[in-house]
Length: 229
Image (cartoon, rainbow, N blue to C red):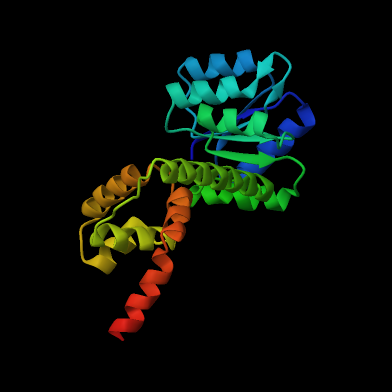
């Protein structure tokens, strides 16, 4: 991590976030701004950022514009929204704009630090209420999609190998771990995952896990193991 961008209009909160950024990413340089236009000028002016902590309610607009600009112009920068808003009207537009994480300000400093530290392992930092809201959304979306599929008379058919991969994806194994377990290359496993997602019409591990549960793959895996034991 080389440089962090903080976009927050309240000076006290801006300093607080800058201090948190330096704690999570030792040695990082911090640029702290208070307006959308200032942030957009920096993002588009050649300055490169590795991580950004962006408020949504700013005096001259919304931080979503900053997130979107970072996603478009500096896709390697991980933009994390830090806000007081925990409703769908702010959350999902921010995620659609390219936010890598979404944190609520009403948490203790220690909680924010712990959540931001997940970035080092590639995990999106999400406050617990936000994570629950996102999962609820995917659950509702998956249920609606399954209902439509049943109405259309369609049923997903996976190959035996695809089923093995999906079971492991749903259980939380990483692609390299699945590759070792099935004695296949990581690239082959990636191809299987893409094909599974396409067949199930899903786009995330959470949705895939819900589909695996609906298809009874966890139970099927246990019965198969009992049969071969």
